[in-house]
Structure formats: structure tokens, C-alpha cells
Image 1 (cartoon, helix red, strand yellow):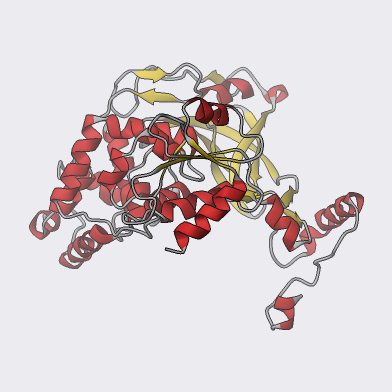
Image 2 (cartoon, rainbow, N blue to C red):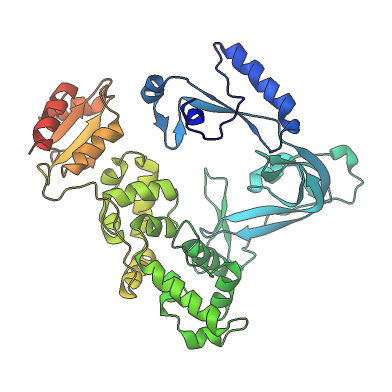
Length: 429
């Protein structure tokens, strides 16, 4: 209402519902009316109508606990599966892609659809030549949802999952407990091309003019064997390549040079560490001052960062243990790639510099992320494990075994009231 009063164009269909039944009825109303709108929608959003309650409910990662989307059934179409192609991703994953006879679905011509992995192909029981039902999930991403088995005429062929990488011929491996299959060749050219394309992408180092075709050309010509090699390219070698004029070579070199000082968060994301997307890269950039400092951190320190957790922390440590990854970081530094540090969350000369703090349990006056940020701003190193080296253990509600561990090791324990008092004292210095 405030935005509307200021003159912003706000939907006139926003309503306040008193009961969940009213919410359900309103969602049905929107579903029946969606085709009459001048723009496409794929659902309706329901929000808790109280700022105070929203703050209390909080959020998980980027998803608020005080809002939920009601998605309408996806628009579907029927077509024929012509083939299944296998693409190799930057981490070596084998990604099946369905090639379809073009079909119009919701005003868009669809000719390809994701099949995710080997298990999904088996679950669908899909064969080459099958008639299939395709939908645009969220009215965007094409996906095969069903095989029309009664339409089979006997000419359909079963798809055989590859035992060797289609790009380099190396053996394919599937790790127990995972759904994805991997090419085992770390030097696979398909992986290399994808890693370089990811490094150059808009959300990463944002190197204009370095798309998939250009990347493939540079790799195939032997000019680039890793992302650091981009920074050793020269004008003469580029101009000698097919479809490279002087201006396009100059523009590409300018883009590569400009990428040397992109923000640290972009560089962390660009490395392609498993489970580290743009959001996690931002959190890490706030905590660490450089790529080298990030790789020097132990798993406990990483896991204690609000929003990171043990799985992401383990993935970062695994990445930094790889000798070839460490050599790449050294090579990047040698060619002048020096990402700009973000806002540092740790004060090296703060009152908690050199102190190790563990947070456990639920706090009432602030979130654990807020408490972590305030302690880090004072210089504290946050970890997830209580040891003899721990200086303070902050104990909230339902603290669990860490509180017992702190008592056994005679570490200084702060309840929430004591933490607030200490924060007032430390932040006042």
C-alpha cells in the first residue's frame, strides 16, 4: 500500500486472507484467470502479513520461512524423443540431454529437455523413438514427465549408458551414494572447456567476448590449458585464429585484463568449487581476504561461517587439498590475477583477535548469523568444535553436547545475557 501511495505500479489484485481456506480459494481463482492476463505467471505467492512475524520466522539461505509459492500445473505438450546426447560438465558430470522433435509448449518451441542422470532415464523407462509428454517446469525449463508406452510400435531402442566419456574416452565412474556419473580424466577437454566458460561467465569473472565457441577454439588450438593461460594470450596469436579480427582480439584482451581485479566473491565462484554458488562465494569473501587465505582455512573454521555448514566446508577443503588446484592458484597470482577483497568480517586488531569462539544452541535476541558476524568483526575466529584451544563457548537454548564439552574442558561459557554484556564491552572499546 505504501509503494502504491508513492506512485509505483503495484498489482491491484493483492488481497489479505484471514484463513488458509481463503488462501486456497484465492490460488484457485488465479489459476482459472491466468490465461486472461497480459503477461505470463506460473503461480501465486502467499506471505505472512506481519513484519514482526517475518523477522521472527527468519529465512533459510535465500528462502524466507514467511513466504511460499503456490505453483500452477505446468503447460505440457506431446512429441517424439529423437536421441539422447551426453554432455560433460566442468566437474566431469555426464549430463543426459533429450533431443526432441520440435513442439510448441506455452508459446515456446521446445526441441531439447533435461534428463538429469542415469537414474532418471531408468525411472522414466524411456527409449529412443518414444512418444513422450513434455512440460515446462515453472513454465520455463523443459522436462520429460512421462512416456506414452501405448504408442510404441516396436521400433524404439533402449538407451545404453556410456561406460566411457564421450569427449575423451576415459572410464566413467559412479560414486556410491551419488546419482551422477563422472569422467575420471581430470584433463578431459570437455571439462576444461566448461571450466573456462564458467570462469568467464557473467556471474564469475565476466570476460566479455569469451563464450563457448571462443573457449572451444582456444582449447582446440592448444592456446589455453587452464584459466590462468587466458592471461598469457597475446594479440598476434589471437589474430592468427580463424574469425578473429584485430578489434575482436583487442576487445577480448581488454576484457581479460579487466577481470584481474574483479571482486573476490566472483573469483571464488569462478573457481567452480562444488557446492559453492554465488551466495556462498559472497559469504566466504566477507570472511577471507584472498583466495590463498580461503584455502588455508580448516574445515571447522569454514563450517562455523553462517550459511556455509559442514558439507560446503568439506568441499572447499577437498578442493584446496588438490595439488593441481593449488598450482592453479599460484599460476593465477603469477599472471596478475588479484581479486579485490570484499568487506572483511574479521578485525585483525580487534579485542577478540587471536581468540576462538564456538556458538551452540538457539539465541533469542539475535540470529546465530548475526552473533557470528558481530564476533568476527571484533576479531574472533569462529569454529564449530570445542577444544582446549577454544576461548569462549556461547551457549543458547537447546545447546546440546557442546555445552557439556565446554564444561569438561573448563572453557569459559557465556549464556546469552553474558554474551550481550561482553559484546557491549568489546564493541565499546
